[in-house]
Image (cartoon, rainbow, N blue to C red; front, side):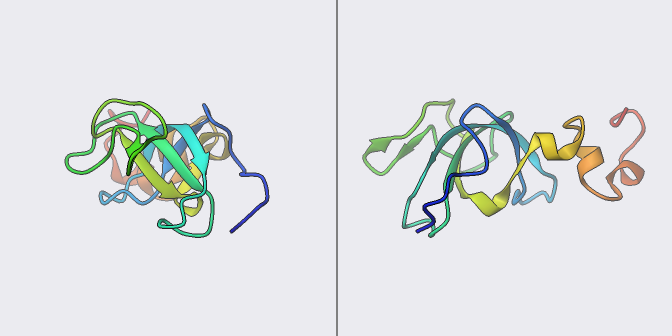
Amino acid sequence: MNNSAPPILVGERVFWLASGSGIPQASTVRWIGHLPEIGPEWTIGVELDNPLPYGGIDGAWGNRLLFTCKPKHGLLVPQSQIAPATHCGSGNIANFIPGLKSSVSASFVK
């Protein structure tokens, strides 16, 4: 188990990088802790801005309520799947993903 302090804080804006769409999903950190069943690194509980089409949680894990959010908006993920929005310039995902600006219409990315 990693005993060092996590590199992010509860309430911080982040991107979840492992979305099936390949596009980072904006979210807010709601919980940080260790869940051995997920892995040895920090586990981050996030509330996604947009619901997942399937899966997701409402903040409950097993018999514990770790945080609260709308159904299908929550995830518990390893720290390696999270990037602080502050590392992405203005927080615009088009600045974060190389080549995304050129592949998305100008009306979407400003």
